[in-house]
Length: 235
Image (cartoon, rainbow, N blue to C red; front, top):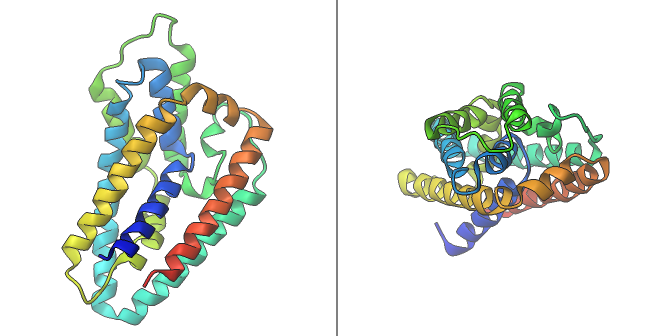
């Protein structure tokens, strides 16, 4: 993978990780109820699910490459179009202000009901936790992190749109997938732990207001369209 292609991959991964969803809400909830350091367990659980999803998509993309490079090209174009669709949906989305719907504030196409329910359960735990902070087992936080991401089947569709532009059929597949996976995981850990977890309270207040939701929808809707353009230009 060339440096220019990897730079595009890195930019796209950062934008995608920054887009609030069920994983971001789960991370913010853990940070508020368990503290910043311990919130890493939920983040790591989300990365386990992300790797599983990437493996599933890698197998599918490999089958497309084996079938026909033309099919892979078509998938790339459809993937870019799908990201534009998500961006437009976010730009046009109406704000939701109820606690259980907050996980779907931005890009409800990217958050499955099961994943939203898992994150909402975490938010409910935060709402009922005593002021003295009840220490949750690391294993429970890890498990919930896995479920929040793994119970989101639409993420598979999303990664199917995201990965193909970075795969060169004329080069060995395994190193390319390893680079993509390592980049996505490292970026997501940094964004979740040093972004959403550290800014849990101010971000939570922003997502609870209609004006804040409109701002987020506009910013990340435009970012998704930008990513679609970047993927369209990758060769």
